Image (cartoon, rainbow, N blue to C red; front, side, top):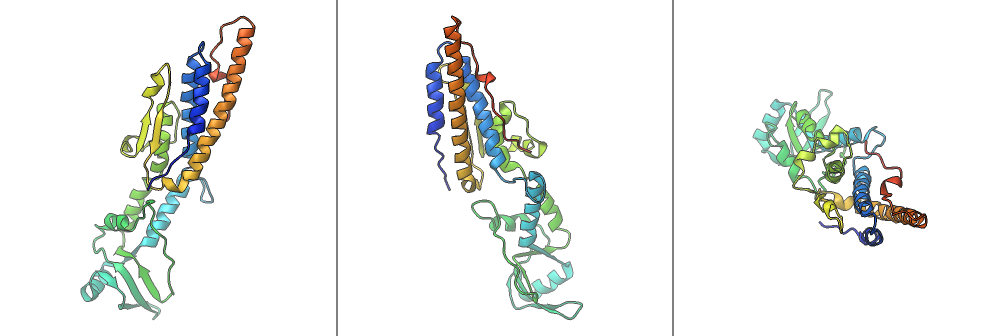
Length: 278
């Protein structure tokens, strides 16, 4: 799945600034560096998890992981698992019944039995969509025990904890270049920087190009198509900010020249508030 982001306005703003700044070349480099850092921070802030009813973005993400996996995976006693699998097999169980302590009869509708819990990750991957998420299924009637995967008690919790430790990885793919440019991110995001080289691009070597400074960054994380519009909005917002800062810088050049001075670098003098990433 691919998504296209229009960066023409941002590139146009950088080109107009670069052409105007003959006497203060550092401004182009500083502005591209600063705007790249700010854009990365803004996109990271827009990328799930986002602060909500469950609290901080990290808590929101961890709660979502737990809900998703508990919806996908049920736990049963080893004895029940052995009894059902020996009589009905380990896949597509629909005709089995169990009796609760209160006498209630439950019809089992189990998709698969993982008798040891060793295949939880495999079943998780099989049930994930292109966006990396598992489709949530509504529970049926009270007299039906429906589960796509059933594992022994005590094996689901450790796997949930393992997946919770991945929360922040998506944000990290966008935040990586910002970190390379000096931004600080909380540990639940920065802990992933060393493990996302295959799905994140963060090349700042072009900033050393005195004639045409540039930076290249992007993310190939699953789910990016869901935030494509947000990314586009962030790019457009930074393009507008760059245009405003360019006008202020050029105005400063004009004032310097009118005073008989050499145009001074000013990119660092014109700054705006930033979107925080918790």
